[in-house]
Structure formats: C-alpha cells, structure tokens
Image 1: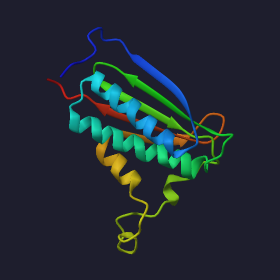
Image 2 (image 1 turned 90 degrees about the horizontal axis):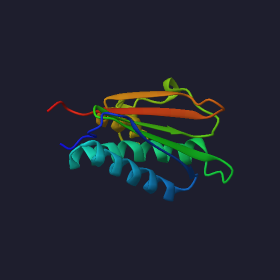
Image 3 (image 1 turned 120 degrees about the horizontal axis):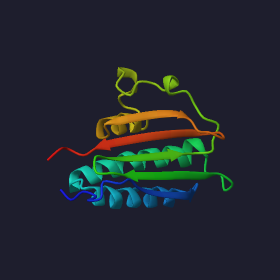
Image 4 (image 1 turned 45 degrees about the vertical axis):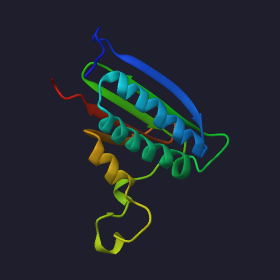
Length: 146
C-alpha cells in the first residue's frame, strides 16, 4: 500500500451545491484521496459508498435541495487514516429518532439503510450539530498496518 511518505496531514476542503450532481463529486473526491492514502480498490469503493450516502442525506434531507444552502466536504488524509466530514445547512435531526432498518416492520422499506451501510464500511461514525446550523457527519477509516 502506498502511503503519504512525509507523515503529515493532507487536507482537501470544498463546498458543493445542494444538487444530486454534488453527490457524485463528493464520492469522486473521496475515492481519489482514499487511493492516495493507500486504501485498496475495494476499500476505496466502500469509503466512496459511505460518503455517497452521507452526501445524499445532506442534499436531500438536510438542505432539501435549497439553492441557498451548501454541502461542506472536508477530507483529511494521513499515513494512518482518512477522515471525511460532511456538513449540511439544514435544520438538523436527532439520530435516535430514526427507525431501526433491521426491525421486522422496516425490512421492506425502500429507504433507511444508509446509516447502516455507513457504519458497516467505516471504522468511526459521529453525527452531531454543525457549528452555525445543520448537521455534520464525521467518518474515519483507518489504514491497516502492513
């Protein structure tokens, strides 16, 4: 696995519009950075899928496609981990209010599995209010020691 040789933290920050095309951009940025960090192709796609789910939630549920609200994407890459923070400018929500996607009454629902996928693919997941309003999700994937 190739890793940043200098051991320092590399950071990419961008602001995206609240449109579904931004979801693709967020996923592309993160997959590119995951590759630079040394993750293999499968891990890159898992990280990309987790970020895609978060970005969709930010655009659709957080910002509700508002032309005046943005999605904030920060990617930090080091020799040991990739950390991705995605924030929206919506009203926020309580994670505990979401229905359990594995409950029998929810198994056939078309939505509600995104957070389950995110938690499966990433090592750390944190959801909290974003400073200035909205919701912020922080995802971390650690590089395996070689």
